[in-house]
Length: 243
Image (cartoon, rainbow, N blue to C red):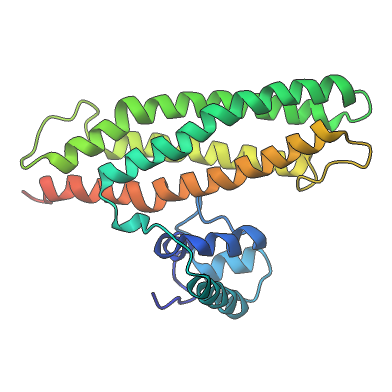
């Protein structure tokens, strides 16, 4: 890809996932706001767009030299990508959400009196957990089976939700909610920097929340910028405009 100022940030990362590391470090949202152009994203962060393009090129070179075993998610079929998301990101969330919840209870009990910001953190994380657990069920029971059905179909068929665009819109809206919660968590944790008086559990909690954010960014990116457009294209091929 020739990365231009008007290239959407989601497309930049869709071509090579390693570029997400550059955007993560610079605070550029490539998942929920993947349609934002590189120029717009840089302007929002007061970044020099040409310098960012250069950093992406440097990242590509490092990746090539180190011969990372990167998976080309854009080369997967829609069904394969849906399975990958469930087997990788959904499994991660079902393991980490309860673990972090229990760890947060422990940290709040030990440090809540001296760190009142933990109350806001706990409330936001609890809401995020509920949102994500509900979100995964909708994907696994409704959207992902429909994506696979569209991929296997050779002729139009009745879709119980009218069109695949309907559940996609719901998922994208919920992704926005998740993105807002992650920004709040980053703010409440001071960019995941545990306080000087924080114990090992305190530091472990913040490290875990940072890993959760990174995984969710990649999770949402794969859906918003690769899987969902692929699903819409599959539907369009079965029901051509004007047919």
